[in-house]
Image 1: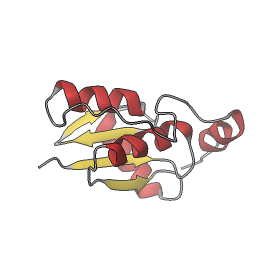
Image 2: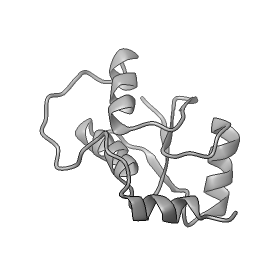
Image 3: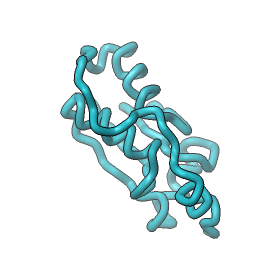
Length: 109
């Protein structure tokens, strides 16, 4: 069984890409909102050693500042999932648009 905690923004290209990969493989995960929860953000920074999201913790291993593509690659490489060819409605390697990025950078915790 894979234990996954994902530190994500509610609306962000990178975060939505991570969610799409979790859905693609039918993986259960804890989605921790780093925008609306100061505690989640601080926990992410403490565990990852840096302030950028998404960060995804897989079985205790922190993947910091990753795209959905990078998470998928890690899961496959470490034999946690078998590669699935499936068309997704969400781009798994695209960032936030400029406005959403600026809003997330402006967080003053």
